[in-house]
Length: 295
Image (cartoon, rainbow, N blue to C red):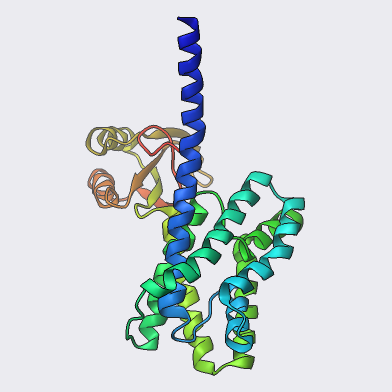
């Protein structure tokens, strides 16, 4: 009986370790496929570029005929050497897997993906959409596709330069290089593709159902809190507030709702107190009771 219990316990442990690993590997594979599809059907056929080290590898492909997968791998060698010294080994191994998966997916998918006949503007837009989804789901899995992402994380760790700022600088370098070697329109269309890709990545990381953090100050706080609990089924927190000008003590409501619940929340507040003070801010991520719990 004890032996059976131990075997079952060990199987549960293996399952708990294996499932997250397989989930992350599958996510990296899907993201790499989408990135490869973007390059093979929209970026390369229309002579566009992309951000980060992949953009520099594309320039090498266009000017020196260095195959894109080879260029990506060569440029990532010093990045991974530096990353292994500065960052978590698990993160680096998954990032290496992402880089290898992209390098493998590029030649493997190319013969099977038809190139659509599009205006170059549409090619720039949809290359950003598809590439953004691919890069976004890889980043959301807690890893990266290597390249500029790793450099940006190292810069954040060592010099407190934000990841967004570092990525922006890399994109500027790619755009300046494209201005020197290619026509102006290529650089401008590449900027459009980069912007769309960044916007999509942001949406993928935040999720499609954004949340709002709401703070309400009113003379009807108890009634407002009661209706939020009953009608929206959202928890509220009552905080002690003290007016800086009036010196009056007043309760403050704090709660989090999603975009779809926001109009109804405003109705509840304004119906009870048209003069209520309310401010709303975007919330990138929420977890806990009533919201998705991170795994």
